[in-house]
Length: 251
Image (cartoon, rainbow, N blue to C red; front, side):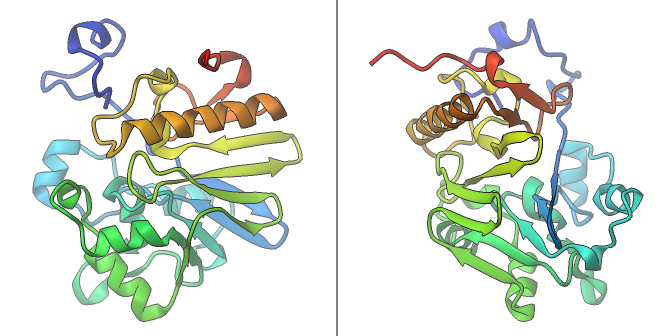
């Protein structure tokens, strides 16, 4: 997860198990925008293989139950934004197995960058192991419940998607104008607080230069608006205020 940062440095601050695995969260984001119920990312889902379960030790697909606690049914979700199509962000698009599988949010439009969709459908050797999305793609296509976008787009009042790249070819972040302020959900551009430093990027990133540029964009936007950064994988920190973000680099 910490890419070029040596184990000897990050192991002092991060607790791991005997297999050097760090506990990570899968924080989805719920946005209520008028009559729209917008969900950002869907987590792992419940379709992991036994090998994947052994590797990742998931605690279960808790997203539907978490939404139900807020009084939101699967059919109430109007939009699902997928920041990218890695299995830990898009796996929950489909629930169930075999003939019983279905779209988890059957009435929702699923917003995906076209470049990300194309890579997931036909991944190259660099990306093949990161995508396990065939059934999800097939069901979205069959039901016609997806929207491909190219670049930036405002999908609802105050909810804007920005093409970032970096982590994957079509990674996107979400900018939110809320009643209590401005937020950016950075997905895997800044998955944990340890990735807030410009030079620290995930080993999964396909283009570190794009990731760094995306961070600079995020920090500039947050400073302009005195906003807050939302983290999707950090088990201790859900959000960071602008005062805790790195200063821009001198040019």
